[in-house]
Image 1 (cartoon, protein in one colour):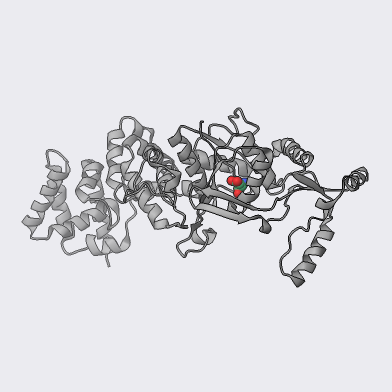
Image 2 (image 1 turned 180 degrees about the vertical axis):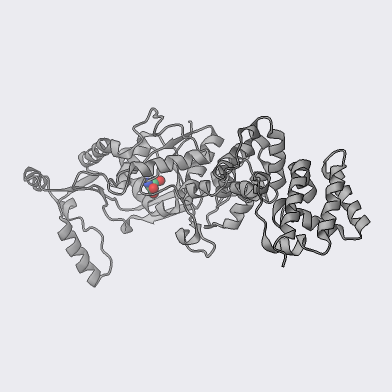
Length: 488
Ligand code: GLU
């Protein structure tokens, strides 16, 4: 039997990290097991769902690389994949359950129900549906039907218990005494979540239901519906909640919760999937850094832990940095291109004649970049004609005693080098420092300010070499002007 899993988001919001992790676990399981990953949009709440939200969810899944095998846009054998297009089928199931006396019409009005609930809450505290309509005779039902009275359909919950073996939490048991005869079809003809989800999962031949912990209490009701339909039960795996660093349920208070915000914020999908996979799952041992293929190879539902997982943004930054370090040069170039374009620093030759140079520049910043946009921001001095100088840096390093003369000497030394490579440049700078009786450090600081405008940069000799002799000499001249003017 081919495993079939599904991700079934309600399009009432963007794709948030919790949903993304559920989708990821489903996808990983399908890929690992040679199964099918179904995407079903549960757009039953017409008022809160929108096409824009659907598109947003699809964008998030695409960005993460979680391609679905059946679902919106691509279809499949078990469509439609929008739940709102499957209502007729849900109504058929409800009607069948009524015919088989596994469910019944309920004519109680909302007013009657809330009056009974209010009364019960004053005396005993809790209330569940008192089965008034379950006791109706066939004739009573017939007369109500004839009078076209509004009615819902309720599931007749039998006595006993429901037990299932959750792949994450182990055996879970519910006493039916605590489950009321729940509504499966509302009086307006709309199916409830419990009915739609089971009807669709049965029709779509879902073998494993992997979803959030918040659905555990729905599971016994759904199992009752499976049994009533005579359908085989899937396996259930309920994935624990994601908490913020303060151990409260992850929310916007903790920062971005939308996957696409991370996409726009310069995170790599590789890093995001690695990070999300490890929220509540572990490949065993202390392995943390995994490529997508490695995640697939190592994934098992049994490796999901029952305890809640903590979303630590610093850990995500760490994963991002690690994956940035590992990206192939041309891949990195493509990924940083949008932020270079946005900064006005892009030229097509960076993927053509100047690719070797451009890749070397990117490599220089890899150890320091946390996000994709850091590359364009930190390397800006490579791509501009006119530098902006940090005033404090100019004051401290370019206006140091005798610095102008030292810079003249450095310029001459650089001019006479055979090759302008990091080793030769360093040797030249150190011999100028020796000859002039100054610390190499002070020349290094001054040169850094001269060519970058700032006090922080990657290794100076690499920077100088990649800038090239002509530009370095130009900047030296400019730095001398800046050092000389307005020194007061
Ligand atoms: N549409 C439901 C939700 O977004 C999913 C239900 C399920 O996975 O069973 O919570």
